[in-house]
Amino acid sequence: MRFFGSQQQPSERLLWSRDVRFANRIAAALPSARTLELDAGTIVVAAAGELTDQLVATTARELPADYGLAAVDATLPEADRYVVALSTAVQVSGLAERIGMAQTRQQVQTKTLDYFFSLRNNHGVHFQPIVDLATGELREYECLFRPVMPMLPQSISSIVQAAIDTERSVELDAFIVGCVLEQASAVVPPDRRGGVHFAINLTPASLLDPGFEAKRLADMIRAAGLSPHQVTLECTEQQAVADVMPLKRQVKALRRLGFGFAVDDAGAGYASFALIAALRPSLIKIDRDIVAGIARDDAKQALVEAFVSFGGRIGARLLGEGIEKRADLATLRSLGVELGQGFLLGRPAPTLAPPRPVLKRLPAPREVAAQA
Image (tube, rainbow, N blue to C red; front, side):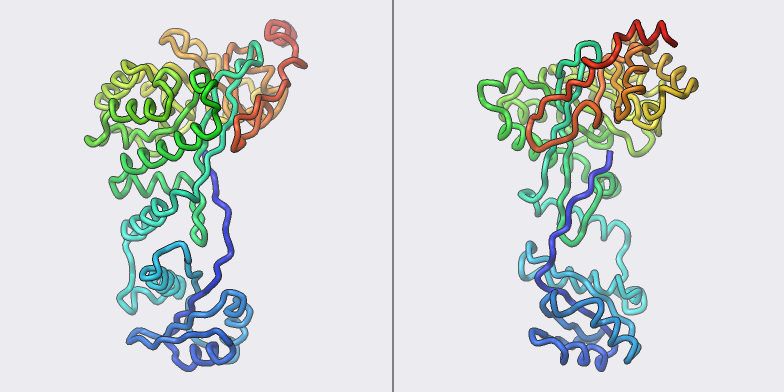
């Protein structure tokens, strides 16, 4: 699942160039320009509306020079914002290695995560209904975290990968769960708080980290006015699990505390039958790529039939993700898939919106099976 944050317009931009004549030519054309000469080049800072791509490109045609442009992030502390913008501009110029300012991948990821964590009040959470495919009734809401990082938009997948690579998965998951619980508490009236169920994503890398404590997570849930019995934890893998036994122990600990546990994206990537069998989740979420077009694809139908049989043997319910077509929805019902989510059933929203009543206009599952 990938969610991209929206961009905000910066108030200032920074230009870096090794050519002092080029930098001074730019500065001379800008009423608000401030310049600073360094050993490695010259910096020009000006209002974003003045220091435009068109102006810089036109000047570069008249006076060819290497340069880099970057937005100045006003949400960062003043002592940091120009240093971060300078680093970005040098990287953009392509000259970082030549002047000794190249950054390793992990250095970039660390700075990205630090920036991400500094923007706690920027990020958003949307809630998407999960629906009982037999009755059309709401079962729970999946909490979809949406990172909003001005001037440095990132997908949630890239943030998760950065946390895995820098061994900060527990820090990331604790941060996201905290944001989700804060928003959930804000949108659920106190008199309904005990009746609403939520699904929250965690990474296996976090569960495998020695710093992860199932009890501490349960305490966070209770502090938000919820019970672990109201929460399903979704495990989304971005890399193979070399040793499943530690993960299996953590899942058991979470289940003992009352949490539901789901394996996400089943049928794709690393969510294999073997991993699912080892974890014995309460919910198996069928990947959206399998759901899309399943009404016309015998192979996909056969795979879902296998998952339904498999789920029945280990006591797990099946959920179809990314349902957008009525034909696919009807086919999933006929195959015995119990739950579903997707734009057809309800779009993510910042409030707890009810699911769409599309199931009332579909034939019963047994009628679909009889027509097949």
